[in-house]
Image (cartoon, rainbow, N blue to C red):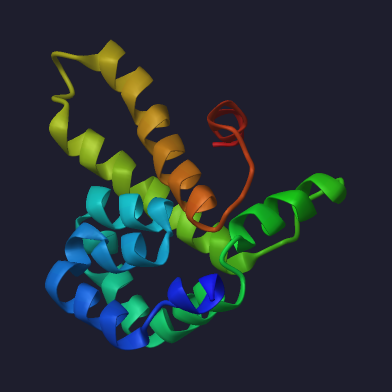
Length: 151
C-alpha cells in the first residue's frame, strides 16, 4: 500500500532532529523544505529556539505529514478560495522575530560609514527574507514582492 509505505516515523524524525536539527534534517525528512531552509539560514531557528520549539511540536508535524501528505497543496487551495488569509498570530510573531533577526545580521555585517547606500537596500531585503521564509514555512502563498511591500 502506497500510503503506508510513505508513512513518516516519529522516532526517525527525532533521530533526524538530534543529529541534523541545525541543518533542518528533520523537516526535510517530513517534506517541510521551507522549515528546513529557515533552520539552516537562522542557525537553528534564532540560535536554537526553533529547535527547542520543534522538540515539543515534532509529533504534530509528523502527524500532519502522515494524515495529509499533500497538506501544503490543500492549504494553498484554501488560501486561493478565500479572499483574505486567516489571521495567525503565531505566524505574525515569527515573521517579526525572523525579520528582525535577519535585519540585525545585515546591520552588523555592513559598516555604517562606508556602505550606507548598500545598507538602505540590504536591510529591507533582509527583513523581507525573514518574514517571507516564515510565511513559506507556514505554507502561505504570498510572493516575495508582496512581503517586501508589507515589510
